[in-house]
Image (cartoon, rainbow, N blue to C red; front, side, top):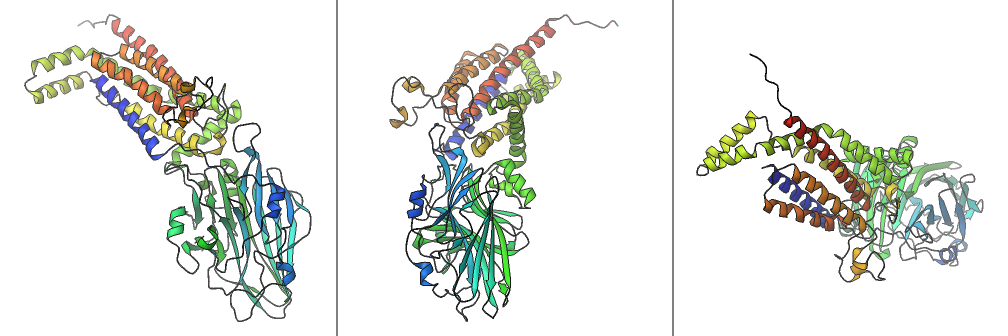
Length: 591
């Protein structure tokens, strides 16, 4: 009876892994835009400004043309960005943040791999950029406003953590526009837009901020991780898809989704990277997702719900923050606390079970900070899990031992009542109740430990902290599958078998996992009564699991290898003590 439950539980676990492969395909991780050199970036010509904005909250008429000297075609002029964590440039043509790489992240684990790029100019194949500006609230008095072709003047030659810069432009009609830019030591830019009015009459303008993506990336996470438009407004998370943004746009602005609220944040997220706008948290704004088909461009951003009145002789300003970088969990939470950004941690897709996946991540991250290795953190976490579940494991094995000892009596009942299944089942249940044996005792630890499996799987897949985290030997990235392959003799034969058939992948760690599972089952079989047919089925299951685990993150495989070893040791010790206790003569109390 117990062995049948063990087989069923194992097969159910196999189905879970099949589900992972089906719903969460292990596609290659999304790579940011291709490297663009400074020279190439400076040669990229900006696209014409769209007459309708994704962030437009009200109908705004096109502004009159800007002075010819400021819109003449020519090479872009750029100001360098050189901060502790990022490097790139600002395009003075249009005042765009469109050239940024991350100094601390590489595209692959190879030593000569280029830095990860998160922002790219508009005319590159994978354009990602941030723009901001103003729109007139009325067309009664035409006002020349800065646009994508406007050439701004800079107050300095480089933006870094110690030296913010200010961009300025005079529209020739009495309005002077300024953009003050600052950057911290990580990935957050501060953008302050100012307008000085020397026209002699009041002007009403709407400020806007938005992120733009000029391509549709390959979504690699399946259902496991969200990639695409994302926002939190009024404490409510909204995750849009590229498809819905393309298909649900409503002319003339082609807005597919909008929500009015106070503060919040919005942007476009990849598996590990994020571009996001964080408006003033006290301001009333409209957040939108839109698709501009003419420019093949996704736009996510904010526009103020009410225009800012710039009186004659007055200067008004509005401030926002721009995040462009890696979704480091603790950094996002620090920004959430320091800048009062609501639910900024949700940029990392911990899922519906975030109340479990986040604590597991923080335990692993704490262990890593003390042990200096996420691999060692996984091994230590496994020991912690085993100790935490030890009482349940002892209870499970005690039930297994009792069930095994009762097998002769159960077989006798089956033989005696083979013609009456109802009575036979009643007699077996009475025997189990008399001996205090729970039929579900063997399942309880499996069910309770299943969330731990899920949390580890989710954390390994979605958190950047485990991306490119190395371990001993050939493991250079715990979040990726084992890079070795038995079908090319672990690299001795110079070809990739997966090019012939994707299923031809089986690394060293999945093989080790299959071996440890085989040993664990041999230990389990020695403590239970199992017929030959059941033994054959159980011997086949490690082979099945070996191929399933070949496509999983190698960190998860290492966790289960170590877990199998600890489980086998636990079973040997606990079953040995149960057998020893059962062999001792029982004292009979005198009457």
